[in-house]
Length: 516
Image (tube, rainbow, N blue to C red):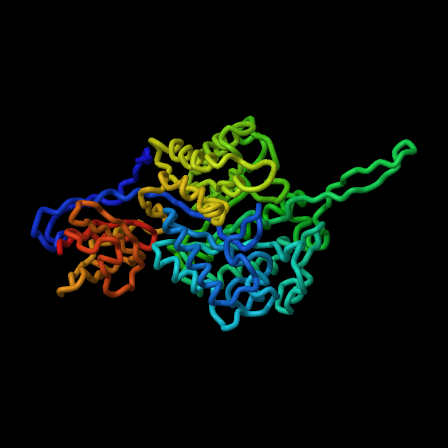
């Protein structure tokens, strides 16, 4: 067993309320560890890999089949969460009044799948059926991809609200400095929070654009010299209207705009659904020199992301700093940044680094395949003896299963034991009661039903079945299912079934044990 630290899921207490049949002395099921094991999934190409959908000319039936396969692979590999890209650049992979259908689904902006279906609703249902959390991933202020083919639909933000749109080098952006634009982007996210049973919303680092430069030719001492000049983001009009006279400088105003967006997003999500997780994945370096010895891009001044403040203020539930460097790479960034972020966390939020998993494929700077399993092990070791619950996010899903599942197989030892997503007790610490489990009499395969033991909202049933050979099988099922078949949970003829309620915030109660 490769786990260096296990977080206890529950403490069993054997009494009449927990053990419903005593044909033999029940055995406590094994402790299930807690670890966030997730992967981003996007249709955008990177290093020869796409996740879902991999083509824009598939029929809805083909899209659904490909999504099912991706989720099957994720569950089989030992992941417990998928962060699905649902808004890439002013578009949507679900029906909404706020954006046109994505070109990645049908090849044309604004054209719906035919026959009609809702890809996000389908993804949520299919993920939950496999015991996977589904987090909806948004690019907030990117308005259009540089290489978009074809014309944007009339309902696209670039055509509905051209007053918010800024061209910046090769990029097309929604200006975060306009309060109306920020409100619009916020509403696109809250629309999903209201309408879908997603487990979380996830925002990446597209706030203000990463800097671009243009090449100019100038005459210096009689000679023509080519120089690169950084392009300034064109928000003069917005600055004059909303910022000048209220802020010391434009940079401070820009950071305020993003801070306001993040804080407002968190507050509104909690107002609508208090148990829903909010995750953010900023650039791995907050500012050069933090920690000492680490240099690189300054996200604080370049994209105006004060991600350390968001963590310190508690405007998120989990942070996924993109620590996209090798363990033994330059400046020891991987170890130092992971350790530094965990010292900047007074609200005790979860910190689960993002890993550049797809870098083992393609390019002259590719990593050795063994780098990714080594990073997973390194993150666990760094959390030994601390209160920090382990976790990580792979960029990206397809990288795990490329080259005949090569990387997934290498990670199989690290993921041999099933793990549950860690709890978010600050969103609700109430412990659900032991559930009521009723065996269904009959000559067929063992089956049972489960109902909550009290009024605490239950999100999942953790079901552990022990076969006659003494082997335990662990599975996770969403509540709301009716009759549960033991065979479908991995054990055709169990001699013990243990069921634990997992609340909407991930808090586990005591198990109820039945003996068929």
